[in-house]
Image (cartoon, rainbow, N blue to C red; front, side, top):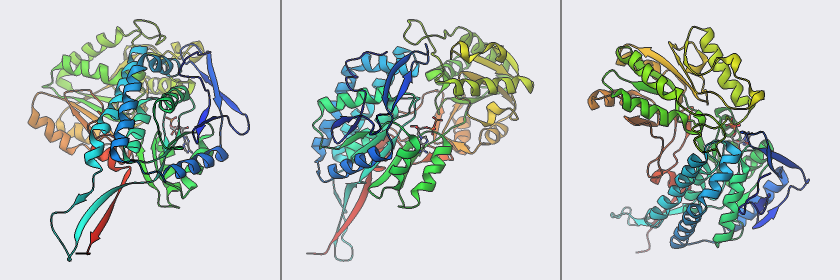
Length: 485
Ligand code: ADP
């Protein structure tokens, strides 16, 4: 069982009270590295969600000025950084990612509070247009969109909520938050910190943990929730879109990806290999932005395959709490089975194993540790090319020329992230301009940052997180023509 001074309440949080489920029902949370039970948390449903929405609606009546909202963000940033080791430890225990990496995620989360603290006063100030029109002065006010529902996945237990709640608070939106069932403890710790350190209006932040379908339906069905921001699977995102119709609810959706990582023949191959390592193995490859398909131009294919194979074969897989672990376990048996299935399918269809483990040696009943694996000679018929693998498997795919790789990279319904490595800026930017991905990195494997908008094209989602755009998702512009003089 986990012990932590940040987990004094293993409970939900509604109307500034720590609460259990009405039914008394609880669910277990496990450490994926050991299989050990860490804690149990309430399993709530529709009734608790309705009360959370009512309390958030009430909080909307208290209007806080921009300076106050900036203060909330600064205090949260500082508190997260102060507790980064302990939040990182909780995150590592319930998610599995190495402790250092988990602490890095806390810093990344804090950067969203920091960024929006710096932006909130100028970005939300009223703006009077310079020209009179129709005999009026025209002023644009930024209003909070209203009560927001925030639904998060397990792969970044603190970063994903930070991307949502920091702009929601900056905008003045009360929230009802639902974490993923695999990783609710980090969220509870964040709530404890915020409850202790912030003087928020009563009901401003609410936490409901439990039945995803009931909580989700309540959020979508309620006319009092004006926006839902969701990060998770495309299937759930589609369902939320259908449910949003009734109240024409505003949606932010960050859904699946199938990122191409393109290595051109003029690329610095060591730089590309290093970029791929950082990009691919964060969270054991369980991120929506990580390279899913690695296209390597034929002229440099063998050299790049050698470099990446050497690097991957040195990675240490193990318990994230142990010093020296590069990669932790996968989150659960379903995730493990999917990656194993992609590997088996590719090998059956003719791919070659360059380093890693054969599928028959991978057994989830002996632990969720998946040996990082590189396979070569992959083609687009294989599942790992048209589905998101979400695990530490690198498929290398040879290609001939730029036109071919643009066509193949774009041959997906997803449009979240892409990466291009090459020497010539002109050539790379010609490729980037034709790729339908919201995040297109050049000579870096980096993912998003608080300062810049991030989001998907096509079936990867709607809206942006980060940057000014990420704040505007939580605001409505109200236009006031004034004809009184
Ligand atoms: P993943 O495959 O990454 O778990 P999901 O879309 O199932 O993706 O989960 C992401 C988040 O969405 C989690 O918090 C999960 O509990 C929640 N979720 C799952 N189903 C629904 C639903 N029908 N309505 C609202 N939220 C849901």
